[in-house]
Length: 280
Image (cartoon, rainbow, N blue to C red; front, side, top):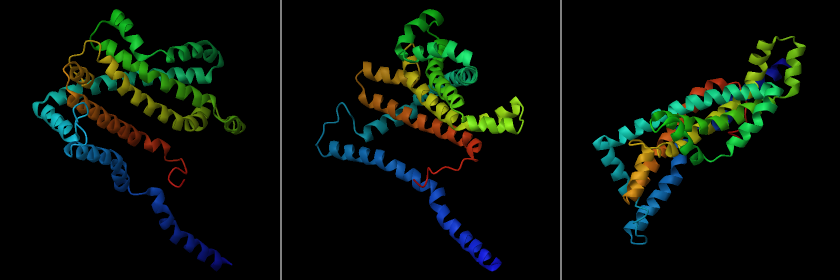
């Protein structure tokens, strides 16, 4: 019988790497696969314009957009705008995410705070981003502070909702198990609550980061003379669609890079998860 168990274990060991390959996947292959759709659309539009099937006046072909990006990069103007936008998004993200985590933890943990604060936050969450612009200009002027605050507002709400909802939805049985083992409140928070809310919190941070890039465009309408949002407005005012699309492409690349960095930085926090994401 022992020999049979050994044979079974060896068979399982031989099968594990084969079955594990699809779970790990090929990162390079996945990256290439993710590029197929945008590259296909770009190549198709380029062929349509060059073949005379489309004019490409309002939607320039990718070659013109890339040429515009190259010219902006060669002159140094692109890096100036990218740096300004990244500094604003990073500052607003730190501000909004910090407040969102703190207040989300308070309202998710304390019923009194939830009943007192949550209705107001949910009502303010429905206010459009542009509605804050004139108020922040009156309060804070037109320099960098109102821009960072506006981006912080955009980041705050998804992070707050994600953290508060994650804490409020922790399985009661997990908390009861912790109390059975007589865990102190700090130990209960560290060993039970924190692992339970981490996945939803990281998803909320990724959502907030994405909204930070959305809100920076509205923020850079407030008297900005640099930034990718300024490039968008400048292209619209002077009828330069290739510049508008170049700024949009830069936003897409920066947003994807920032999201990837956030995922990589937070991945060690979720190593304990055993999910079916790669096999469904």
